[in-house]
Length: 185
Image 1 (cartoon, helix red, strand yellow):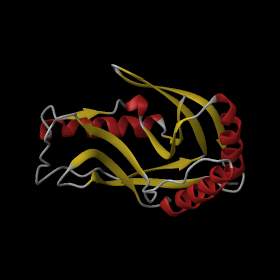
Image 2: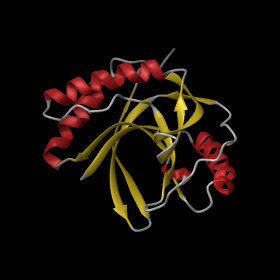
Image 3: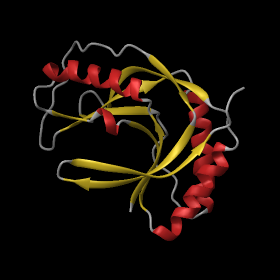
């Protein structure tokens, strides 16, 4: 099953991001496929195809990592493009405050998963929230002026293992496992 580990985004934040993404439609014509607000998440680690036998190892790593970190605030702010603004494929909102804690947790997760036989990521971890993807075979030109996203912060209280099923209407996500971070007093 196609699997990844992510931070859930609170509904109020999803709504704010959805309103922002909707305001950008006029800047990108039909060249962008927008992520539905209910599908918004911040991917920590994309695992790809994982068989059911290896799922318990993933769950154990997530549980081990979350037991070593307290919940923390994460701020979403600023926008950018992967791989670059000149050759955009993905439009994202970045994260500043709290990003270092997420990076530490990611590194611990990478180490644990590697001991279980999973490959390390070849690219450096860059916490971001994908809000749109450029449509296939579309040459998107990024406009000079795009409204910026007004920063919003939320509490990261845990990590979730998610199964992703690709359909013609877009991905369908199913939560397989959740593990909470240590609650702050």
